[in-house]
Image 1 (cartoon, rainbow, N blue to C red):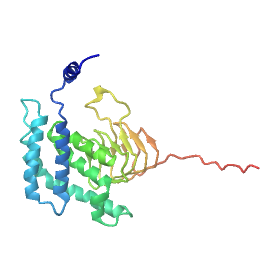
Image 2: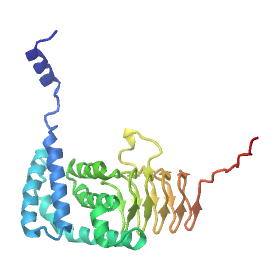
Image 3: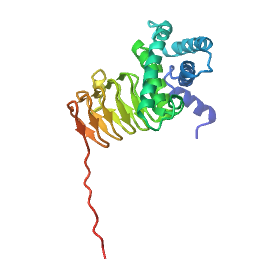
Length: 263
């Protein structure tokens, strides 16, 4: 049996990734929480928090920008300039939820308690960092939202205005998905790829959802060439791997049989 020192040395030898620092994950979660509060909490001081966010971001940029020829520090000012436009989009999302969900009693309820809104918010905030090319942090932000809400939105997805995820749990939206304006989806919906292969890394693998589409619970829509036409309805549990024209209704029709009474 190995002695204690030999075991310790064995573990050290197996740690082959010098940039694998869990501090990155912890700092990203702190950054995400502070950013959300800064944008939405009425009692949070914006100016003071923007300074705190800049300090956190600088630390994150140092931790994740491993390429000596690439600096991430300058991203912060450009990102800050985008925040008002992101907030405007998120307010449209919240209003869409409040106006379309009869269970919503106030707009404040949407911001405070709807997991779908929180997941959309963190997606939109991470998406801009993804566009800027900041490594790792955008994905960690959306995975943090995934952990809290059960909604998995890749930061690379492209999502239009007034997006509504109802009930939220189990929703999966892939990296190359395109969702246009006024789309509503329910729990358990997957916008995924038909197959997974590393050589498809830079290929559109996930579907396009046009304007005013509603996708009901547990529907699965797959494939980069799949387009769901505007104003269509995809019924619950539907399995869709081909394009659907606009104004369509796709349903998964079950067969109902009434049992005969036995004597």
